[in-house]
Length: 182
Image 1: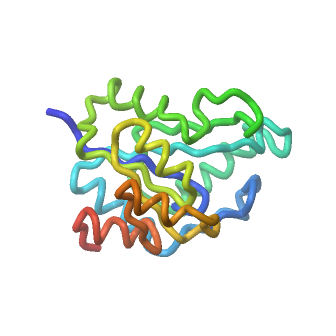
Image 2 (image 1 turned 120 degrees about the vertical axis):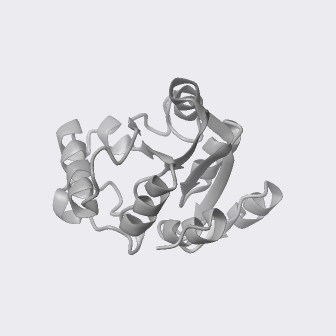
């Protein structure tokens, strides 16, 4: 049996976007995220994080800093482990060739194959066009959220042209698109 899955951007989708979040005290959950993740897990969704972290590649912060922030997010979520089936932090700078940096579909495609996921029941959710493009590039659905970075000119038209819904936040996506109650 193939599983449904949610691929989630971290900053601006699960936690507030601190622009190169590098200290645990910067980590703040977006309201309703904990409940939305718990409801998705209860419904059988596998959860994945795909986050661009060019701050590591640029030398702004270290892997240890990243892991400390991830640990703080898990602590704030307070959900039974493992919450996430897999997490990928792409450290490539925007000017470097991209293996995993969104909008690359590589991590999503590898995860679909590795974890027996049903592409027809998978979503990539995030606050930037590159987030939903990663999903579209992998042949899954994408969703934009307004809880992080402001959209750039043309993003809404791009989303509409590609059937990408836009919601105020990940919890609203979970309610409206997945029918989750929490």
